[in-house]
Image (tube, rainbow, N blue to C red; front, side, top):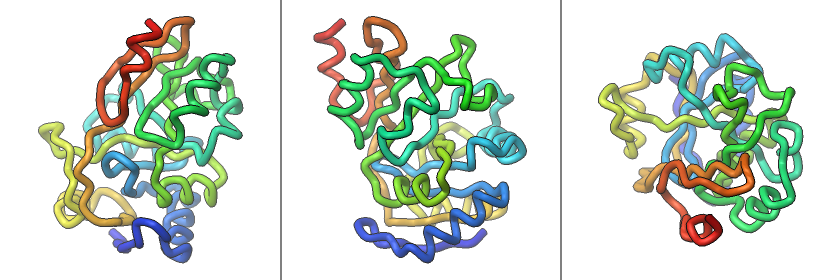
Amino acid sequence: MEFYELHPVTPQLRFINKAVEVLRNGGVIIYPTDTVYGIGCDIYNQEALRRVHDIKHEAGTKLFSFICPDLKDIAKYAKVSDYAYKTMKKLLPGPYTFVLPAAREVPKKLWTKRKTVGIRVPNHPVALMLAKELGNPIVSTSVTNRKGDILFDPEEIRFVFNTQVDLMLSSGALDGKPSSIIDISNEEPEVIREGAGDVSLFYSVA
């Protein structure tokens, strides 16, 4: 596994480009977000998606969210109501995953049974630069051990995943919670998981 340490505020573009090259070639990477480290690949590479499922010890049924660089292109990947857009504009970039009706552009392997997808725009320059330079969304699923515990320390992650992923971008130890998951695919929002980020807004709406 290639391993690069990036500045957490002004990441070195040469390392971002190395990761983008790996993604374009069907590779799997580990990278920092505004919550925890993520395992990711290009959403359009089916073989890479299978590898991520294998790494996470999932049978291919778990919902993986994906990262977009900003709100501008989200309509390509999901059906966005006026309420959903206003909500996301208020809270993104930030530590939230929003569940929305899937658009045809998204591979069906990333759809839930309800034909929804999870979208993130994290407040972290590395994740945003990756998605922007790649030109496609990147799969985002938290880095965990076999017990399902989230791993925060880059050196531990490097040791555990050394033979499983192709490249890791490190920006130091992360000590956060996973993103809060909010379903805004219907008229009323539903908090699926309380994680990082204030979710009180959604309880008051519901």
